[in-house]
Length: 383
Ligand SMILES: Cc1ncc(COP(=O)(O)O)c(C=O)c1O
Image (cartoon, rainbow, N blue to C red; front, side):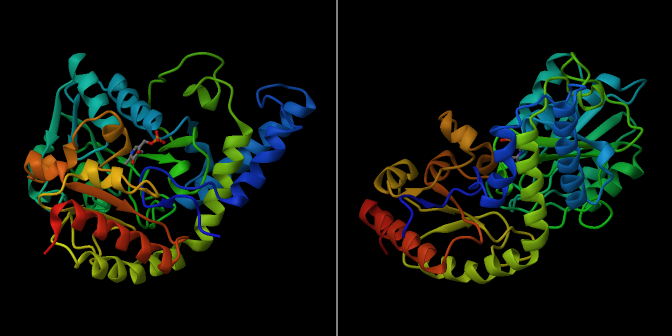
């Protein structure tokens, strides 16, 4: 049976895996206990929470003690940036980040700036990746924290986070990685695919539930909490935890650990199919080479010259696509990522973001792209 809507919006969110749902259900049905309660039910709920913490931390190659459950990567990014900067002492008070970060990092940076924190927002190269020489230059003795993402949510650029972490360490600064789009998809194990002092994660980008994420914090690192209250999550995130959401996130992490390599190979094999379908109409791909090692192979950001992306999306009600990050397109804001790559405002408006997962069949991808190409042609992009 074909799904009602073909999902080409996998960077916005992913479908909940049946395994994740199964892990959640008992905690939504009969076992309604609060993990903070001292009675037997509470202890069971706490055990489920801790088991999920071990599962998520294992995919990160980290000790579970450093993992703080949050409502998602937005909160994790807020906690990382605000928490570190609130504890910054002496001359090291600057935050350095990049113009193509997710809005929850950039808006947090702006918030901190309004509070008097010095902030540097660095540009990126035309392919959306950082200029490492420029980063090294920006990392002076006043920098407390460098923050960069693992995979960009609009253009699929895979960031050289190990090299950025090394530059930060050399300069005596901490490194935070927003791994919302990389975790569960590419190697994000600490000491292997990723080096960082803090890492933000999101459940719903990797077939887990929405409403949960985590911040991993290197043991010993001092961080101020955003929420005060009952002292849950080591005092760093007060508020009743959800065993159901945690169990779903944990199950998704276990699933991802088992499927990651095969899924990646499959997506790499599907990319040429996508590219060949697009050749039927004039277009330009934004970001790194879609068949190269610096791009997540389940993403394409495509500009169709002369064709309004909003009209393309409206013409294809059976396909879920977007013109950029869900949060900015939903708010009607043009993509700051595409603008940072040097696209003119008109070209930004002519760009769609395509994202798919390894769960999509090749037939489905072909059919969706053929429908997209036909719509582009109808709307004025024919050769
Ligand atoms: C790179 C990146 N960071 C952070 C977030 C926010 O994640 P969440 O929805 O879990 O708050 C997203 C989601 O769009 C993202 O793509």
